[in-house]
Length: 286
Image (cartoon, rainbow, N blue to C red; front, top):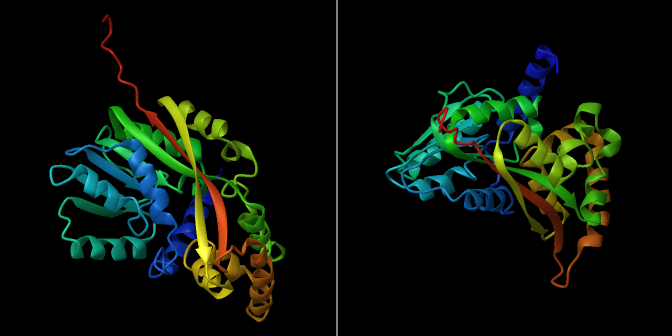
């Protein structure tokens, strides 16, 4: 990707996450936190380890990492959106976490010291980056030999969710139709594709664990609030103001396909957790 195009893409991502910093993962619909916590569990951080949370957002993985490494460890969280970092820094202070450092930095090129972390996580981040293979190579260099990396990405969604999100399609510009986040083509379309990306960056022992993450809404209005509170806000912003009620009405109709026995609406997303290890290189001749 052209450097100017990559910079513009990064700026657009930072801007949207600045706009959602106050509502991100905070509208009463658990989503990012359970996914990030499963990723952290998959990596088994140990007390005393140095952990890196790439694309920390509002701390979905950060708090789990801090709990795992304890008072003798340390967690560095970075995010490209200054408002996200400021909000998460305030929460870290409120939690009394002296072992957490938060930085405004680009996940694509964090500019941190080489071989300075034992474990690194990037939850729902990799597919936003302009050059995922280059980012993975950079993250490889930040880990000590034997250090572990975990990334979460999306697999398939149930048909009801696909139909629901399709209410935005007529309004979206080409850059918002990027199939990497939806996992419909390219390396993010399969477990093997993501594993190959991670292995090509130099990681060994690459494996994937998958699980279903559900999200439940009481009505279309709660779905609207939730979809405005994270990256999907860009979809709403692409809809002309005078057409948004129309989109919400269409969404309410499509949500009916997800109504469960309790009267609420449940949607299901497959999530993959891909982990790898920076190999320990034996001294020459041994």
